[in-house]
Length: 457
Image (cartoon, rainbow, N blue to C red; front, side, top):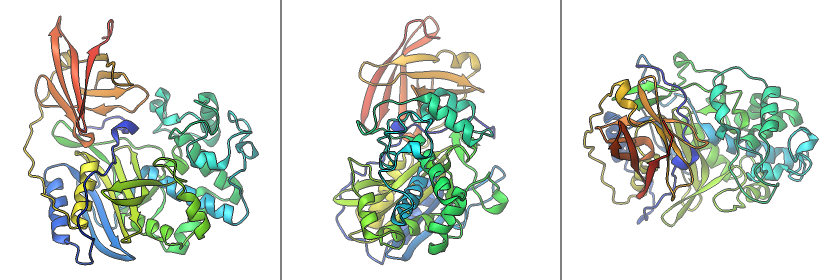
């Protein structure tokens, strides 16, 4: 196995729209055998590694772990902890709302109370930070993020980066997902409580709920049952990057087990942490976004929770109030469209018709460094808002959309390649003068035609 640099997935690649219609109620006699066969099939075909939990009320109906957690093959268990990425935002928002309940903070408090050097600090409110309406530029979308995300950094350095990044719009004028806002909320929790984020998390959420396997991450140690993450490249699982968790902080630094993520959302939604009034405020949605929550449709049902993606990890946890079904999927290796994984999980959970996929084997090939040069360059499409740069790195072909994280391409033949965990396929054409000058991009039933920009290498 060879180590590759950061494989952070861009927001436009993370598709979590559940589109299947449900036909029956989830029952206590969940078809656990079919669920296990489904995830075993995914794992055996190198499509998934991770942990899964399904609860009805406060009872665990299904909990299993699949795959490995280290480069030397340590197997996962249901006690393995995974980085949960942006699911952390739900914990951060819950702590903020608890501090509001206690009278230590107000949703109308402005950012200049704590960090007056931030752009528009005297106008940005706590509620706008929670709702992604601050206008602060999302620092993980900036190109220089790739230069420091695994290294040591300080709070002052992060604040300087946020200040220099500026804003995209005036506070409250629009909505744009921003990790910057949630890192600042994590810092504000520390300022208000006089404690570290980790200690505040323990006092407000983890201790009262007895969540003993959830904590603020500090490195990865497989000998402590902490899962490393992987990407599937060139026919094998390759170690992914390791983000320094001091950087995502309140936006994405928590680790947990699938069961404990499910228990957190069940407890939150059933009034075990916050008052009904605070919970109602969190569930006031503008589009899909509430206060630290995202709502997900599955047919005629609605789930409340959050998704996450960091390094090679992908995760989702959510609760359906009508039937009190809670699920969590924490993955440290995904070579399949995560949306399809979740559709399978929920279809089986609710007793819908669902055929376990029978994967057709596609063999990856390896091209020489000189052959990789045939594809490299910056491509654009009149119908797609972002350019896509194709480049080689360490003998692998990579793709990166404007302002997004890079992802590896698996090469199937001279013209066809893809990134299966996001359901992407790219078919190259128009070869002349030693270069491919066009490709067709397919994802989620849509397709876009890209052409090589003039002067691009």
